[in-house]
Image (cartoon, rainbow, N blue to C red; front, side):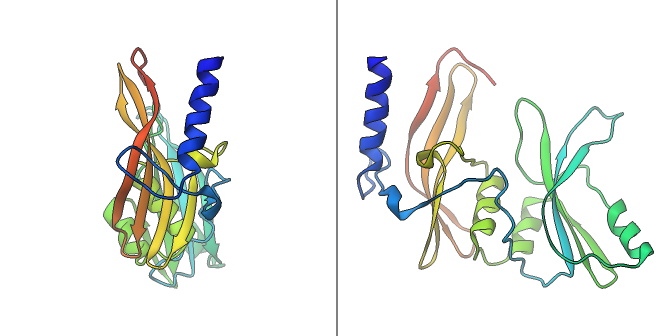
Length: 213
């Protein structure tokens, strides 16, 4: 119990400071907003003004069973003509862009509709073209999630974001080793408006030498 309290106190000390250095992350979390949703993507701002789009999560099943899909976010108004609606609803993807959903498998993809034109965006490169400038928190969080980072809703020290003059700063987690040891690191990231992700600081968040995913 004493050891656990000491670790918590050390973590609080790290995050109560205001500068980063080589010894770990030192930021003032009062400057950040906690991430409070699993899928905080309602403010996605695509480069193209689509009439309607959906961000979809696909849970991968066996080859004989269709993927389970659900909408993470949507924007706009889908066309009302039955043929148009059917064409949109029948679009799907067998691959996409992050995350991995270990130990299972899943991916995200986007369906768009503009007039009578439809498209499926199912690659990291396609997502970057779709987003264009990373100018909303939703853009930044979807982009960083696609690049292998994630957040913990229960602790602002493991999931936070703030807007800056030239992009966003985030506190994120990433699993860096998956088996003996299992290791998760905490990152202080900067995302420029053009989507460039820079690591400002990094430290070990969790470590288990006997565990695997």
